[in-house]
Each structure stands twice: as structure tokens, then as C-alpha cells.
Length: 112
Length: 119
Image (tube, one colour):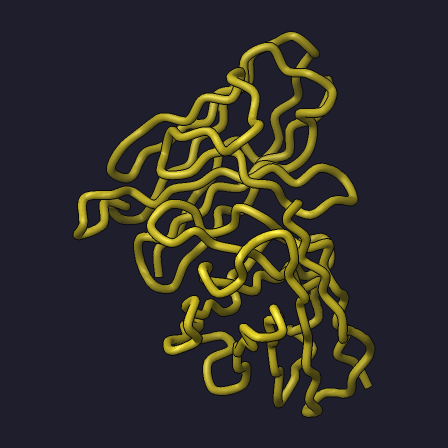
């Protein structure tokens, strides 16, 4: 199975700062069709997860442009510029290139 | 507005069965793949099952293969998860999710339903 390793496990931030989360895969996430099915989700406290980014760098409908996904192959990053209070919670990366689909362990974005 | 509403959770003894339902609204159900994802208390997310829009193909990780069955009734806009031979490690909140295949795998999520497996 593909293992997604997220770092850091916790990211203390000050509101207005930039935050960066890494997601490294145990193997390339490039599908045989040329697409890379790497997604990012945010789970706010007490809520269901919500999709932020799909196929590495595409923002889902309604997601602010301060969320930026990047990367290729097996190394991916989610950057959040100018962190706002509603951005706090646990971020998960997820891959749907290889069966079984797998999630990273999560990164908690919290206030310093 | 897309809505996914799960029901059917509860307390069940190890080895017994439970069936979850997810009623979908706000979109054309039979155009979308659907999935179940779970989250054990205080833990991360785990993909559990997926089904094609027609229901003709299903997919599972090894952790539930042979015990869980995903199905759908497109006439009733309803997704199901039949869970047999339940174990304590199946204790989790189960989320119903919509996928736009080839693009996203979880663009909308339900509120989740809790399943507790305990004697």
C-alpha cells in the first residue's frame, strides 16, 4: 500500500502567517493516464472533512486562493498564506492513484 | 445544494452486522461514484469502499474486503454499506462521500454516523 507521510504533525501558527505542510509518498503518484490524484482535505473541529485541493494544485469550488497546492511525483506541499481563524484544524493529504486509496496521518494547524 | 445524510449507526456486538444508509440530494445521483470513509475516535481517515455510478463495480481495502459490501439504489438516491462480522477496530464515524471520477474523490461529505462495536 502507498504510505503518505505528512510533516509536521503539528504546526503552531500566528494568524496572518504563512503555513506549509509536506506530504511525501512511498511511491510516485503519477497514474498511468498521466494524472496525479493527490488531494488535500481540512477537518475543522467537530466537522466533516472538506475538500480543498484536487489533482495536486486545483482548488475546489469556493476555496480561497490563499490555499496553494504544489508538487509532483512523490513530493507534495500545501501552503496557506495569511492564516485565518477558519483555517485551523487538521489537514490530510490523500491519494487515489493506487489501490487501495490512502490518507496521510494528518497535520494539525493550531495557534501558537 | 448537495446533501448527504447518513443513518443506521449505533452500538453492535462483535461478530454481528449493521447496515448504513446515505440519502443523497441536490445532484443527479446516478452520475457519480460514491464512497464510504471512516474515522476511528481521535484517529485519522481511512477509505472503506467505493462504487461506480451504475453500481457495476465496487472497490475495498483489504481491511474490510469480504466483510463489507457497498451498494446503491439509484432510483432511491441511496447509498448503502452492509457491514458483517464486525470487529472492535471497526468502531468509527462513517462518512458518505461523493466522487467526480477522474477529478475528485471526496468533493462532498455527509455529517457522519457513529458505529460502536462492543460487547
